[in-house]
Image (tube, rainbow, N blue to C red):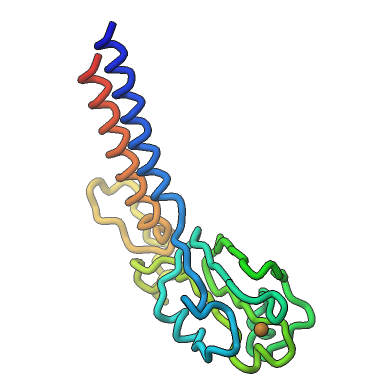
Length: 191
Ligand SMILES: [Cu+2]
């Protein structure tokens, strides 16, 4: 009786352990814009330098903390970011404590919509590189589209543009398999 309950609680614990591992994988880091100074014009924060010092990933959360009486957050296009045009933002946030999930690769441009603030430097470019570990796509990529020997066994695959997503999926797949194996071993040992 006791040992069955014990085994069951161990399995539950193993599951919780696995879930916490997976949760860490899927939830992104939280970045507070301007650190302790927040989103402001009075502290002379170099938001460009701040953004360069970070490495952003898809799923990360960008937090803008500011006095909503004086500031806001507008997501704008690259052109609007450069010219500080705040007349037609993509989105506007005004809570004073905005958490924005970065869910795509590439540049995400944010400015303050208060008059003169963007010009004064209250603007930030959150750039999520497509795949940091992948080498830049070769200009010869289109030329290598034709030679594809599908029957050659064991031949090293030619590097082509098609394999760009592989480095992203393989590490997660490996880790996921390892975690599932861990659980399988625990269950097999118990029963
Ligand atoms: Cu402002």
